[in-house]
Picture 1 (cartoon, rainbow, N blue to C red):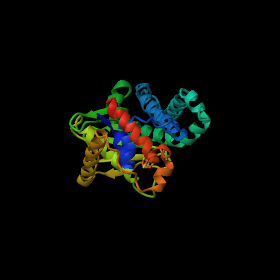
Picture 2 (cartoon, rainbow, N blue to C red):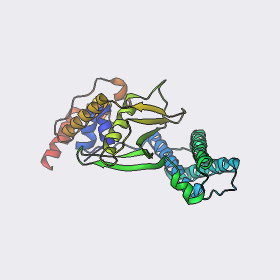
Picture 3 (tube, protein in one colour):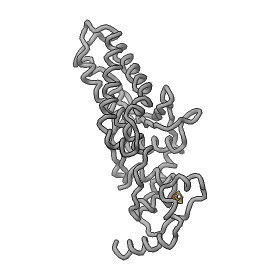
Picture 4 (tube, protein in one colour):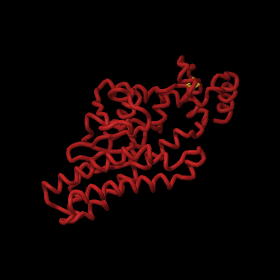
Length: 283
Ligand code: SF4
């Protein structure tokens, strides 16, 4: 079964998918990857701390206390998440304080949003504790594993938001945002998750969000049949490459090759041929 990461690798460069999937070349871990993964951990931990926080709210808890509790709990969850990855960060000379600084505003925005949501429920329903938590929508499912037998693809959605009437995928991106909307590959990745989610949820929304850390609010992306078709074609193309022993041609995009981890060996056609022959001798 392919992963959404494999499909997006194919979108970046079909030959790179061949190198990783067929020849099993490993992409070496880089500082930017570790930073991104720690930031995802931050949003996973902040989402996980909300239940306890809401269940502790009583009838005499005032608005300022609730807002403050949210902010403190979310920032603390972020700190703990970052510190739990200190060793990994250290390998790339990334300092936990620098990571916290870069996510703090986004974490506080998230806390303020969720506090506002909870306060609105208290205002309208006058419920507290566990009963209040039951009413909170959307519930946030962070880092949700999902797979589709029919598509033959699996993946981990950064966040699924569960509303009563709809289920919405959200991607969290630590890089810079475009002036509007989302970068094409981010839109496509979101479409992939929405397709996968359709096998598990009946009410997948016709849209999703890309949450760029340097931007607020998250960017809404409306799906359309052409995007789904493009993704389905990309999945088929990825499967063909993953099942082949013929490396696709080099892409004609110097910028991509310059940033690619395989740019030395990938152009050594003799070496690639030997690798393929080895593979055919020992399938
Ligand atoms: S070096 Fe260029 S052609 Fe080779 S895998 Fe990387 S992006 Fe693709």
